[in-house]
Length: 127
Image (cartoon, rainbow, N blue to C red; front, side):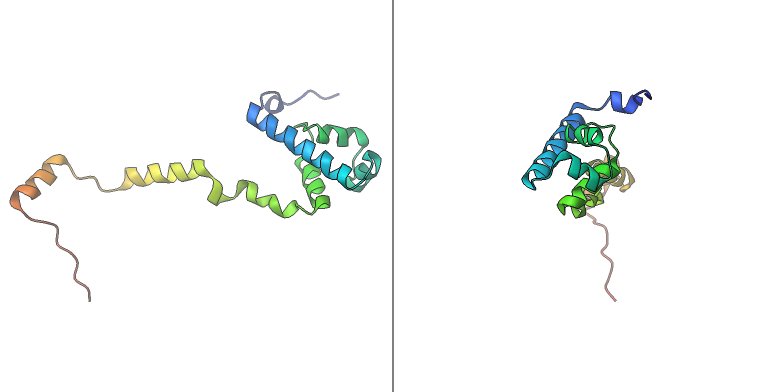
């Protein structure tokens, strides 16, 4: 039997929990449809032991198998939203930090000198 990849051995607890819940939800969906493990595995094109691993939330089960199970449930359309750019808070924070670094920063002396003169930057005239 091949060894378990390092990435699967060091999954964050939140990821492990999420896969466990996904597996439970898929098992509930199968039971609610009154499908046996053998019939469901056949529809997925996998073995019963692989189905059991999927329903336990095993991270070694291919994402393609999880996607096929979602398709059988009529929920595959929800899959792309998982990594939607609009929901990527890490990238959003990075964008904001980058914008803050790029913005024009006036030195305190420049601001004080302008205030002392009582002048303000001129507004651009509209054409």
